[in-house]
Length: 185
Picture (cartoon, rainbow, N blue to C red):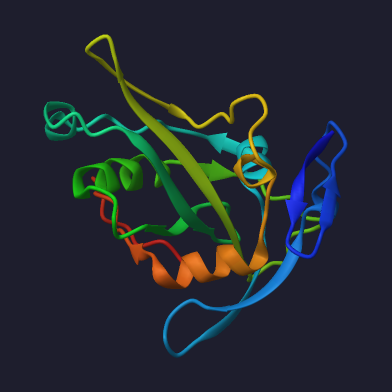
């Protein structure tokens, strides 16, 4: 099944089972201003496939009232226990949508494949949500590309340079936690 191209014309071919070894890329990036961390990168299709627990954002009342619609993409850093440890969202996104997405994404957990995941290292991925108001009814769903969408719009697309650049430019959003327990990065 063809999922898309990566910069420099690298085409990923995945089996129906989503063989993780074919989509794993080793990256070096800056998680904060002083620390260089090594992480693995997974496209959104793989993150969805290995998700154990998922949640959709709740459409905020003020966003509905203002008729704010569109896509919200969250870059996520997954720790070696399969929990989301950091969430980054573009600074241009409405604040209430950012918070709703962060609260939902924080509930996701993942079963990371031991044959491709290296203990003690983080895993970078993303989740994309579509906020729409259809016939006056607010709807939130996971993004699904339209038929004929460009390669860059496919869930299996992974551009190492873009993902890294976005991670460093986007702002970190803290979810609202009922039980305040920090997660390991």
